[in-house]
Image (tube, rainbow, N blue to C red; front, side, top):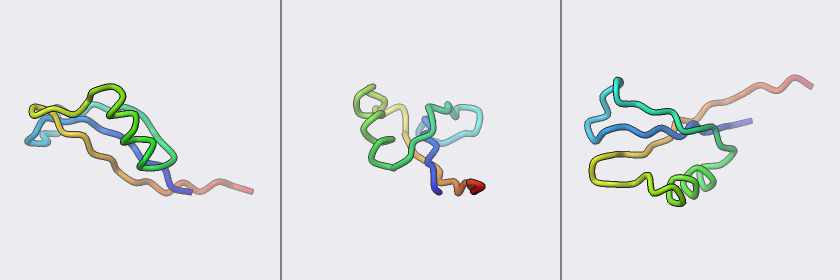
Length: 57
């Protein structure tokens, strides 16, 4: 199973500026959340990181 972490950063992507915004099941849901909350701007960058999670049966 894949999950996506939505992260906001300054335009230079310095590690100290990272802000975790949540985990999402799809990139589309993460993008929709960012749009609905006006997280895009010329001073900030939004990106996501993909993680694989093993779910025991």
